[in-house]
Length: 357
Image (cartoon, rainbow, N blue to C red):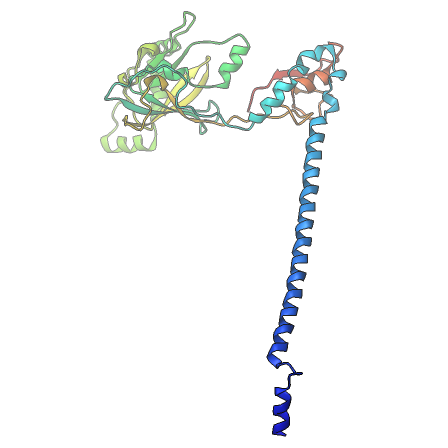
């Protein structure tokens, strides 16, 4: 038995077991590589086809978008009364890109270069909404040597825009800081708003004193009166100055205290001098760049209630053909709905210019 086994292993007609296994493994490995290669090639081809399909779809969408036109804004259906409105269509489309963007703050709006004189003080000047007194609308950095008129010219208020459009703009106005009325008297037509108040203080001292006691009757003042006794209340000695001749460094004020800005007759804003510091090298060193806008409240604009595309330019009230009341329209939709051949179809409604919220 041992001899038979030995002879069979040493026979040249039989290959060693390890050699057979090695050839078999090489065959299986080659088949596996070819199968993996074919699979990868198929996946690559499917991905390429998918990418080409998406590219064709994207190109078709771009072509359709370029060729698309809104039938309701086609110039062929316009009227003679709305020709001017249709001519603004391209400008309105471009303006849509900036309807939701806030006002950008620029470090300087002038090419003039004026060096800052040292030492100089930088003040943080805040302006609040005329009706929503808790809402800050603007914030500036102003220099102590700047005139108050330079800040007033930078303050934005919708009331000024409306009054200018109505042809009733009033250049008058004043800042009331502590006991000083700073009146803007640059224009010949300007009115000294503080004069009637000063006359009333002089001729109606009893009424003025009573109102002043109500103003200062806060919790802190009551505690001070309880400690110090019932001291007699005295009215402050108010005075008036010209805003164009008054600098911030000429005034006495308290940081964080609320003061008053009044313009256009009776439009009043709370103003606050929030901070004061010396200028440093990291600040803008161009005096002509101040007052420097550091915050601007983002204005909200409504879109047309009809097309939902353009910014609203008009608002109607009690309009029987409008989808809602009040209803906001762009110029194009307003003329298309209310005019035919240049004549108004009906007039039993009110219409106003719309600016922003």
